[in-house]
Image (cartoon, rainbow, N blue to C red; front, side):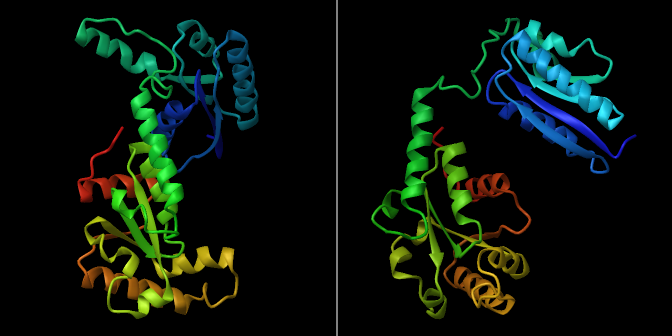
Length: 274
């Protein structure tokens, strides 16, 4: 077995489904290094042939068969990947659609774009509205919209508030604002005035000081802001504030933004809008 294999995530639309499906499987093989390549909008035989050629070249380069994880509706297009001995084709639809059809006694419509297209305009509009809300209420710019927020994420600078807010918005349609704790906030025993009225909406994010030190050093190297001593102080004070005021909180150190968002929804019982 070579030290590296190549995996292609191929779709007739965005590639998000094929990528998630394939990566969730490949992540179970930690001893193998995979080179990932996502190719969206493979909706013609010509484009499929182009992907096949790339996969053949990768197989020769790796001295091992290339993987193609596909989520392509057209059986004619995805059949292009079935005939080459240099390719391992893992077909999302062929793996699951026949089982569901047999159980339901109904044939699948097999229409491209139903997963990530704008098939539900109400759901799409809810997500876009939530994204705009997150952008307009980022980093404590103003409290004028906090009353409309589903959740307000609180934490020290660079603890993961903004990406988590945006993921909650884009994936779940949740209106998430965030408030960064400043040194002045951390010196006070009370909650910051801007968020005091919204205590029931607050959710804290914390982080390992060493990790925070690394992140901040990339932004402001050799500054007091990034020093390990200051990172330890800010994290300790923030966690003390959360405990003192009964604010639920979670560490972002070893969690992906997907895990954080799902955990926040589970903890707060906030209902997704899409």
